[in-house]
Each structure stands twice: as C-alpha cells, then as structure tokens.
Image (cartoon, rainbow, N blue to C red; front, side, top):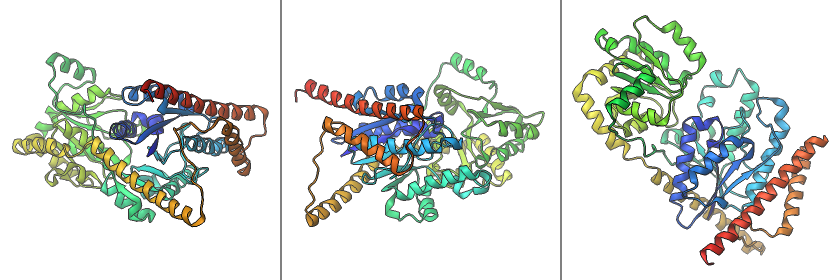
Length: 487
C-alpha cells in the first residue's frame, strides 16, 4: 500500500501549536510502523520557510526521494477574497500532483488550514478516485458558531466547506472517542467512517532530574520565583482562563501568597488585555510568552501542579504531556479531558469557580492526593503511544483500501475493465507528462480558473513545470535507490 501524507499541519502557523507537534509525531510513527507499506510525504511549496525543517525531521527514517514539494501560483490565503480563484486552482494542482504519485490512500494531517496563510487542502476537487483520510481534531467552531463563525460570513463559508470535506472523506481518524462521537452526531457521518486513533505525547515528555543551577537560571528567565501552578495551551474563551484566575484568587491566603500561577506559551492580546481588569495587587501571575520545548518539559516536571480548565477539547494534549512528566494534574470534567486524564478524583466542574479553587487547594495541600496523582499520572500516560496510534491508523487504511480494491475488482469482472499496472511513485512514462499537464489545464478551464493576464499565465506555467520537474526528480531518486540496493 502506498500512503501519501499531506504535511501542511507542520507547515502553517499550526506548527507552533499542538497540531504541528501532533502532525510530525504521528507522521514519524507511521513511517516507523509502516512495514512493507510505502510512505510518501508531500509539502506545500508556498510555505517554503518550513520545508527544510520538516525534511530534517525525517532525514534519519525516510529516503529523500519520498518527500515531494508541489507548487501553485500564490498567494492563496482566503482571508483576502481576491485570492479565491487562485486557491481553487491550487486545489486542482495539489490533487493532480498527489495523484501522479499513484497513492492507494492520501491522509490530510490538518484539513482546516488556508484561511490565514497559504495552505491548500481539499477533498475530491480533482482526484475523485483516491481514498482520502483526515485527522479529525475537533468541531469547536461548529458548536460555538456565535463565537467563531457568525461575525465573519466569509470565514463561516470557508469553515463549512471544510466540514463538507470531512463528509466526503473515506475515513476520518478522530483523536479521541469524544471527537469521534461528536462528529458522528453533528455531521451525520456513519460510525464506520470515523475511527478513534487517539494521540500520544512525544518521548521527551518524561520525568527528569535537573541541575539546581540550570533550574534557577531557567526559572529566573521567566520570572518564576515561587512554587507554581502551571497552565499551558491556548487562550481563547473555551480555555476558561478567566475562571482559572478567579479560582486562584480564591485560594486560602497562605497558598495564594506562596505560589505563582504560570501561563506557559504565547497568550492572545485580547486575553492579556482582559487580565488587566481581573488582576489584583497581590496576584502573582506569570506569562512566559513563547517557550522552548526543553523549558516546557522542565516546567511540567517542576510545577506544584498542572491545571487544565478547558471546557471543550478534541483531546487535551497538555494533560497527557504533564502526566508523562509525572506532574500532579487536575482538569475539567468536560469533553475529551476525562478520557485522557482517567481519574475522576482529579476532575472539577469548569463552570464553577469554587470547584476549580477547591481542587487546586487539594492538589497543593493534600499530600496523599498528590502521591496518588503522581503514581496515576505515569500509569495513565503509559497507555498512550505514537506507535499504537500509527499501527491503528495503518490498519484502518488497509481496510479502506482493501474495500475499495474489492469493489473495483468486482466492477472489472463485470465490465471486463483492464486494470492499469502501477510502478514506483513518479515512474509514469515520460510521454505521459504532457497528457498530465493538459489534463490539469482542462480541469482549470472547465472550472473557469485559467487566468487571462500574461503574468498570471506565466506563473501557472512555472508551477506546472516545477511540479512536472519534481516528479522527474522522483524517478531519478527511485533509479538511484534501486542501483544502490543491487536490484
């Protein structure tokens, strides 16, 4: 089975968030667990500043000729309506490029990309034959339309078009049972078309022992001078950080004065502005802004407790990361968080400030509770692994491809359709290159997407040539690989 992974989840601004970490870790695990299957990665040439970083992540486990870069005329980010036609054309070029690799299945690591930034994702806009699989993180904007969609009709139209993409996919791989059930209910997708592949924390999230001098230097760099309660993640409304601050302010005076509440990572300007109206003179709130991964691991290891008050998550990866480091974790009894945390005793009502504050006090003061939670954290986190996640995904893909091939074989036997043999990716005969280009041009013409200006036509021609040349490089790569292996 030839699997093509669209890696744009590790190329856009998402690469700075959980989606980026998830994309890279999942893709590496798929490569490592692929066995006899053939894995290829495709990257967006419009997101050029991230290409080398992604390539370097796989240089030790994947041959260079299995990493492909496609191009299209840009810009295509849909926040500017004048880019709409270029985006539609880029969807055709991307799908045509991937189709030329002759995959058995294409997996999109992050579908909801491209409104801000030059990502391009689509399902069935050109290639309506190859099965498409999609990582399904959550449907938070769909459930909270007033907050995320209603004020921006163009973004709402974009978002709903991606939702339609989920419905057209051969399989959606949800990251939690909660996300799977939510999608089945909201989208009316049959349950067999959604599977829970779960998630995992990367191996470097683990209990650590640090030199005291390094710890002091690191904590001083972020303005942390006391035992601290840690939060990391986003800062939009569902993260529930205003209630967290109020819960911290309600702690007994002794606990409030001896601790700090640390927000690790970059918080939005809107949230920071809101904090100004909440802050008290005796508050000890710390905002680290961007934080290096090594430092985040250390903060998980060093915190008095980790708190996660979000009332809607597709998975809640910070909870798993903190537990993997042996932290005492308390979190919201909402959405997917309970299945990740796995301990009812550590849950609180995210909409009740008193309950959040009470659970924080327990996490800080009850030593028996703290010991139970430390032991539970390591037991629970060991149940999640990227290898298991990848193996499950591959098994699901095998089922999808086998079902498709069975249907095609039955159709061929009835209609006596000859099956086209397939070689290595990119090894189609050179005389088919022109046919491929003409097919793309005709597809653009049918959609009224061919530009009329000379400069725009030239850019399209350059992209088509670049994509064609990239496929030729693939052929050379396969030839060299075969020669070196003695085949």
